[in-house]
Length: 163
Image (cartoon, rainbow, N blue to C red; front, side):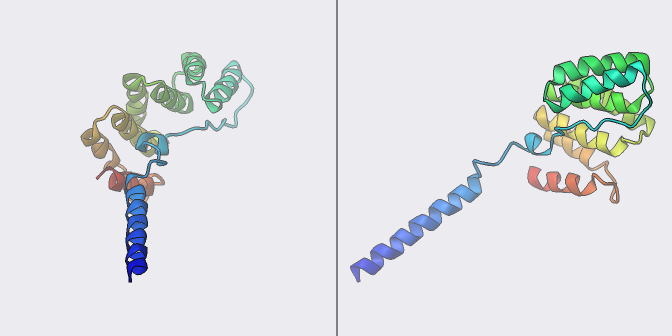
């Protein structure tokens, strides 16, 4: 009888330990890290000075050298101020550099212009607020992503995880 009681106590202790580990999830990344973009996809374009700068920016971004990527993208935007692609990735590079105001400036401008990247911008603006510990503002931006947008499922998951 005594060995059965010891067995039950051992099983209960193991179950409690597993429950605690699942609840605390020490291996889980911070929400921002889980949803951040880590790769810049180069556009298909003709050969220009801006394209060689974009190629350099892409290399830097994909090697997590966001400061250098942002500097190259600044040059591209100076040459082609209307290039949404460069402004979008410059915003993402600034986000990774913790330059949240600069990141939001690029991303919010693209949002207001109705850019091709509009809903993705809303998602990353939300991440910028999450990174800045402003969950309320992050939720506002996530809720601006309409059902049917490619970012909608990811935004809904993030909203659930933020609760």
